[in-house]
Length: 171
Image 1 (spheres, helix red, strand yellow):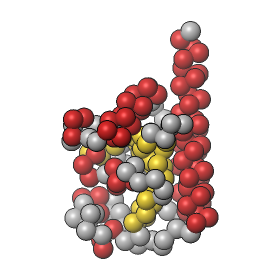
Image 2 (cartoon, rainbow, N blue to C red):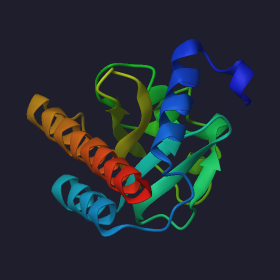
Image 3 (cartoon, rainbow, N blue to C red):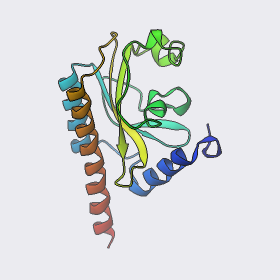
């Protein structure tokens, strides 16, 4: 996928993400803590902060996943940012969009996914905070969806803080 193949909102997300200067940066404790908390709260072996540029999803923080990025073309998060709420797939093997996805058919063998979009204050979606399991999952309750949104909001606040600190350091 290339930038010209993205829709307007996806191009806006890539531009917004570039403004944060966060892609391909080292691990940072604040982000690592959020994914550890998400994995613990939702009892999943995998939790990710997934940021989408034009060709890939890159993981700013991760629990339970070896890869640091995957092609955008196979990412669950691309689907998640197209909606407004939590995007959930309780059984990936029964969903025609994902049943043949290599993230499902090969390692890590994802069987369920739930992701909340990471949104700027203007509502531009740049990625997700997501929890994944190797077992089929349940549909998240309204309260669980709200909690996943709260954690996603914390990610964006951490991104904003990081950008403000970097900007102040360059002044």
